[in-house]
Image 1: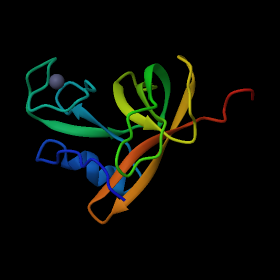
Image 2 (image 1 turned 180 degrees about the vertical axis):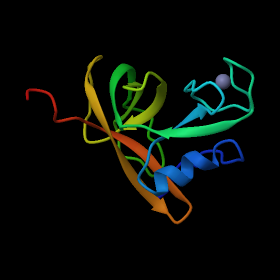
Image 3 (image 1 turned 45 degrees about the vertical axis):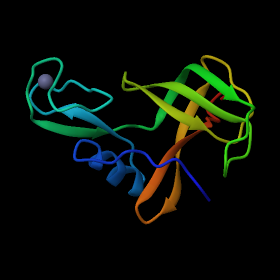
Length: 133
Ligand SMILES: [Zn+2]
Protein backbone atom coordinates (compact mmCIF):
# COMPACT_ATOMS: atom_id res chain seq x y z
CA UNK A 1 0.00 0.00 0.00
CA UNK A 2 1.44 3.31 -0.94
CA UNK A 3 0.78 6.29 1.25
CA UNK A 4 1.94 9.84 1.33
CA UNK A 5 4.37 9.89 4.23
CA UNK A 6 4.08 12.86 6.49
CA UNK A 7 7.19 14.79 7.36
CA UNK A 8 8.59 13.64 10.67
CA UNK A 9 10.98 15.76 12.63
CA UNK A 10 11.83 16.79 16.15
CA UNK A 11 8.74 18.99 16.32
CA UNK A 12 6.24 16.35 15.28
CA UNK A 13 7.74 13.11 16.62
CA UNK A 14 5.55 13.20 19.74
CA UNK A 15 2.48 13.27 17.49
CA UNK A 16 3.48 10.14 15.56
CA UNK A 17 4.55 8.40 18.75
CA UNK A 18 1.02 9.18 19.91
CA UNK A 19 -0.82 7.77 16.93
CA UNK A 20 1.29 4.60 17.16
CA UNK A 21 0.06 4.29 20.75
CA UNK A 22 -3.54 5.05 19.80
CA UNK A 23 -3.46 8.59 21.14
CA UNK A 24 -4.23 11.85 19.41
CA UNK A 25 -1.75 14.26 20.99
CA UNK A 26 -2.28 18.00 20.79
CA UNK A 27 0.76 20.18 21.34
CA UNK A 28 0.41 22.21 24.49
CA UNK A 29 2.53 24.91 26.05
CA UNK A 30 3.72 23.80 29.48
CA UNK A 31 4.25 27.43 30.49
CA UNK A 32 0.78 28.84 29.85
CA UNK A 33 -1.35 25.82 28.93
CA UNK A 34 -2.27 27.05 25.45
CA UNK A 35 -3.14 24.28 22.99
CA UNK A 36 -1.75 24.80 19.54
CA UNK A 37 -1.80 23.01 16.25
CA UNK A 38 0.18 22.69 14.10
CA UNK A 39 3.18 22.44 16.37
CA UNK A 40 5.94 24.99 16.16
CA UNK A 41 9.06 25.75 18.15
CA UNK A 42 7.72 28.56 20.35
CA UNK A 43 4.35 29.21 21.95
CA UNK A 44 2.37 31.80 20.01
CA UNK A 45 0.74 32.99 23.22
CA UNK A 46 3.70 33.42 25.55
CA UNK A 47 6.82 32.66 23.45
CA UNK A 48 7.90 29.89 25.82
CA UNK A 49 9.79 26.89 24.40
CA UNK A 50 8.48 24.56 27.08
CA UNK A 51 6.36 22.22 24.99
CA UNK A 52 4.25 19.33 26.11
CA UNK A 53 1.06 17.79 24.86
CA UNK A 54 -2.42 16.84 25.88
CA UNK A 55 -4.15 13.65 24.72
CA UNK A 56 -7.31 14.65 22.86
CA UNK A 57 -10.62 12.92 23.40
CA UNK A 58 -10.54 12.07 19.69
CA UNK A 59 -13.89 13.63 18.85
CA UNK A 60 -14.62 16.63 16.71
CA UNK A 61 -16.87 18.36 14.23
CA UNK A 62 -16.50 18.87 10.47
CA UNK A 63 -15.59 22.51 9.85
CA UNK A 64 -15.16 22.08 6.11
CA UNK A 65 -14.23 19.29 3.74
CA UNK A 66 -13.33 18.33 0.20
CA UNK A 67 -14.28 15.17 -1.67
CA UNK A 68 -11.62 14.05 -4.12
CA UNK A 69 -13.29 12.01 -6.88
CA UNK A 70 -10.66 12.26 -9.62
CA UNK A 71 -8.00 12.13 -10.92
CA UNK A 72 -6.92 8.74 -9.53
CA UNK A 73 -4.41 8.65 -6.67
CA UNK A 74 -1.93 5.73 -6.65
CA UNK A 75 -2.72 3.24 -3.93
CA UNK A 76 -5.98 4.95 -2.98
CA UNK A 77 -9.60 4.14 -3.60
CA UNK A 78 -11.70 7.11 -4.57
CA UNK A 79 -13.42 9.14 -3.40
CA UNK A 80 -11.05 10.43 -0.72
CA UNK A 81 -12.77 12.64 1.82
CA UNK A 82 -10.52 15.18 3.55
CA UNK A 83 -11.96 17.28 6.36
CA UNK A 84 -10.91 20.19 8.48
CA UNK A 85 -11.89 18.91 11.89
CA UNK A 86 -12.58 21.14 14.88
CA UNK A 87 -11.50 19.03 17.82
CA UNK A 88 -13.62 19.35 20.93
CA UNK A 89 -10.49 20.74 22.60
CA UNK A 90 -10.71 23.79 20.33
CA UNK A 91 -7.96 23.17 17.80
CA UNK A 92 -8.42 22.48 14.10
CA UNK A 93 -6.64 19.77 12.12
CA UNK A 94 -6.79 18.21 8.68
CA UNK A 95 -7.58 14.55 8.32
CA UNK A 96 -8.90 11.88 6.01
CA UNK A 97 -12.41 10.64 6.74
CA UNK A 98 -12.85 6.95 5.94
CA UNK A 99 -15.97 4.86 5.46
CA UNK A 100 -17.92 7.68 3.80
CA UNK A 101 -18.13 9.13 0.31
CA UNK A 102 -19.58 12.44 1.38
CA UNK A 103 -19.92 14.61 4.48
CA UNK A 104 -21.81 17.56 5.80
CA UNK A 105 -20.46 20.50 7.73
CA UNK A 106 -21.20 19.92 11.38
CA UNK A 107 -21.00 16.12 11.16
CA UNK A 108 -19.53 14.57 14.30
CA UNK A 109 -16.36 12.55 13.84
CA UNK A 110 -14.33 10.17 15.93
CA UNK A 111 -10.66 9.45 15.37
CA UNK A 112 -9.36 6.03 14.41
CA UNK A 113 -5.86 4.81 13.62
CA UNK A 114 -4.62 3.31 10.39
CA UNK A 115 -1.40 1.44 11.11
CA UNK A 116 0.74 1.50 7.97
CA UNK A 117 3.92 -0.07 9.34
CA UNK A 118 6.20 0.04 12.38
CA UNK A 119 7.11 3.65 11.71
CA UNK A 120 3.82 5.13 10.69
CA UNK A 121 0.28 5.11 12.02
CA UNK A 122 -2.01 7.64 10.39
CA UNK A 123 -4.93 9.16 12.23
CA UNK A 124 -8.14 8.84 10.23
CA UNK A 125 -11.65 9.96 11.04
CA UNK A 126 -14.96 8.11 10.97
CA UNK A 127 -18.48 9.37 11.38
CA UNK A 128 -19.32 9.20 15.04
CA UNK A 129 -22.31 7.13 16.02
CA UNK A 130 -23.13 9.43 18.90
CA UNK A 131 -25.67 11.20 16.67
CA UNK A 132 -29.26 10.21 17.29
CA UNK A 133 -28.62 9.09 20.82
ZN1 LIG B 1 2.61 29.52 26.20
